[in-house]
Amino acid sequence: MASKADVDYHVKEPTPRPSSSDLWFFSYLPWALAVGLTTPLIPLVALFLYKGTFATAYSPLVVAVVVAASDLTEIPFTVFWGNLSDRLHHRKYFMVGSFVATGLVLMAMPFMPNLQTFILMNVLEGVCMAASAPIGTVLLLETRQKRWWPRDIGVFGLVSGVGTVGGLALGAIWLYVLGWNVSATIPAMQSLLILTGVLALLSGIIALRYIEEPEEYTDRESMTDDVPAYAGLVSTIRGLGRRALNVLDLARGEPVPLPRSELFFLASLFIVNLGSQMCLGTLVYFLTAPDGAGLSQAAVFVVFLASALTSTALMAPSGKAADRYSPKNIFLASIIVRAILIPVLILIALKGSFLYLSPSSVSMIGATIGINGLIGVTLAFASTASTVFLLRLLSANANKARGKAVGLYYALSGFGGLLGTLVGGWVYAVKDVTWAYGLAAIVLIGGCLIIFPIHYHFTPYRHVPLPIKAKSATAGKASGVAPWTKT
Image (cartoon, rainbow, N blue to C red; front, side):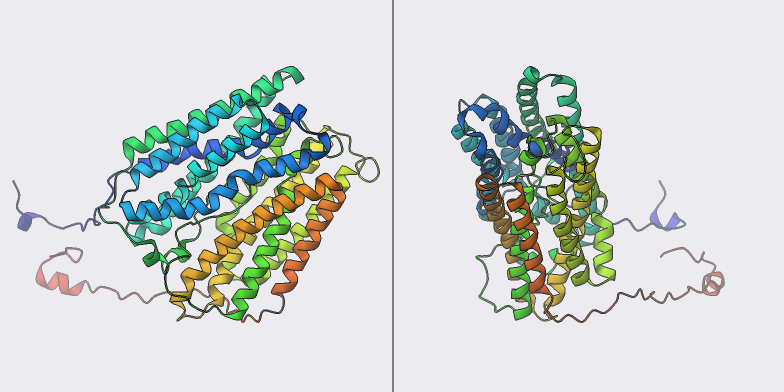
């Protein structure tokens, strides 16, 4: 057996990772499929399965309540499960429990006897689902060395994004094949909801097999200086187009005053999310309503698929653009374009008067796909640009404030979207789509006006190559040792 001295050269192997398996990443693939399916499916089931239990005029509000129900519990329970995981020093079984419990709830939802119990189960689903995002994120960071974070977070986000897109595509095919007539539509949606539960259970099985507990547990507050640099992790929640890192805890740390410019930006972020969800929260009803686009349930999945495709595909390019160019201008441009696109949906609702589009026609489907795809572009660019803009508003020495700021960022995004969903549904039900979507566009413009006065000096990114010192080959030849040999 050759000794080390007999080896001509030595290859320095990288330090082994604390977690020996990367296969646990793929526990999120069926999970993301289920999330993609439930994005439009749960509101559709509530709208059509229980439509005899409420007045038709209140259908937009019913859809808004169903969309907001799980988010109402997800927001606080995201912090609760993360804190509990920190205190108990366990990650694996929180993840497995989240997947399994969510799967069981989803499988039970189609059998609820009335709308009230259906909404209650939707709330319970939000409680169970809330553990997967924060604990999965921290688990990734704890089982990976920092130099692998950019690549691993990119892979993690790619798995989630591909799964979400795949889930929407599966839903469209499923309902097109099985829901071929009116009488078969509801059973097809019920069976599809059961399938989402099966997919969540499959994620739990994969997680149980491949997730390993980290050797060391890190306090989430200690990550506040490192995590924002890798904010590209995407967690798609109920089709709201939100990105949630869910690592930070608002209740921790000493109170730190925030700069005035940052407070203005956070206020604008709240208003922008409120305006966006006044439209997107009732989009499922608009797409299927006779006074809206009048599309089939399968076509609704295709429309949602357009937004998911564009937002997923452009997440990485939008991040690079926000780093290279002014994130303030990118954010403003994205919101203004979105404020223009939303009233176009009103024109679609007035199909005969302006665009001459008939309900469920190919031209109607194409128009809604195009608009929702463009909205997905604005979601991607606004999301990344807002994160980068927030971090650049903070001074270099504001490390203590950074954690508080990013925590407020996600909290205000969530609560603004939640309030916007409910307000939009109420206005849509009491008035009509013109009032609801017109008001949403006005609110978006109002959010932009708050950002305009913020003074921001932008320094363009410039790549500076590091000097590389050439290794001299003469020394190796003189000593009789190959120049690439490491001794």
